[in-house]
Image (cartoon, helix red, strand yellow):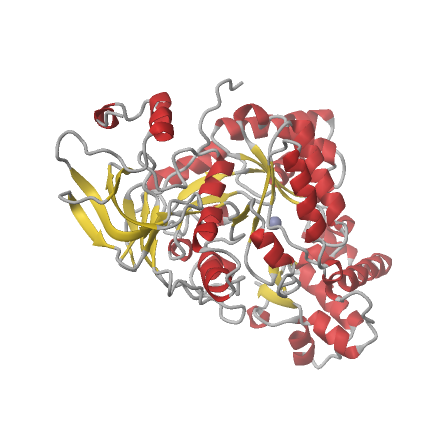
Length: 556
Ligand SMILES: [Zn+2]
């Protein structure tokens, strides 16, 4: 292919597509000697597709990868020696909640230091509803990583009908459909739900189908925090697949895990079910964070009816003795289902101790002293006995304060659910994290360590994945889900979202007891061909911008 056309037709979408699809991975010499912006030499190149690493140089200009190969006699403004380092596509995090903090913490240092160059925000049903305005604000000053967004069903529903626990009227549904369509027109990548938390939990499947139909013409996908991740997870998977089939959209299962001790092992069935759907032609994918604990509002332990109308309504309900008794009973049942292994007796003091220590406080604005403590520690500091009923009373109090928790209930035993999901070919790595002020609260360490941890634990220590497989799960696979054919791979013509890291030292340092610690091992990070991290130092540049899916031929 004559390479001269590289330099003249940039911007023509169709031709670009053709070049990207037909260009050899090692480009021919350009007709005239040209200088490049950045040259990365001597690195171990991992392309993102799972292909074996190979030694190659890459040359970057105008934000794109222009050449790959043994590039001798090439000049560049900046030349980096990547000997002993991996050079690969920047990581694409399909599950971030950074929409909540990115405008205040634009550098997203905790993510950049992991090698992340794109964040998909708006997960679990929660997002800005005015996507055009959000993207405008992102682009006004730029960001470290690129920012893509899902439109959150819960946020749309709350705007139209508050936190009401009922079906929408036809007029309300039409209003929600309008908001979803507007979001997609403004560049949202799809629709997200949380059917586990209110207000999304108040929706039945037909409501989601009616909304998801409006993302189909834009090529959007449906991402879901399923209605159940414990003993009823198989029903929840069926619901997710049904919604996708009826609406005619791809399905993406968020943070796939088993969050009830008594349901450990069920990923054998869930993954087999996803396989069957994929073999039948349904485009289904999933993501996962590599930890033995999850995180979220402790309100998930309360029955959904008790949270209808929001926290103020919950606080009123627990003033009423009979409603409080009903809530207590429900919390207790769920605690037993989630935290006790099958067959364990809640009357057994040791079992109760173990179960209650599985819940740790992440964020408690009303009392920061309890952040980082688990329920057993809090009960002990109050000189209360560690019993199931005392645990329930404490939880109800914490729920009424809107506390966020870390739930140490995922199976990380060898060959357990986390391993099984990790090794599944269609699983992307994703953080479920966010951006915030360094040192604020006691967050789940995944916001700082998700991606490096995969290399440290699953590639180097346990050898469950090869380096190339791990990188694929962070790059080409999520890029494919987003529909971006010019990101997620190191290939000529692709955007230069690049990470250069040391495969021997790359690791997470954030822990559940000390979460505010940056990952180590990442040397350089480029976003759209510009440095956000250079030689381990954060730059002041903000080259990231909003990322919308490529246009679909016939948009309404
Ligand atoms: Zn979620």
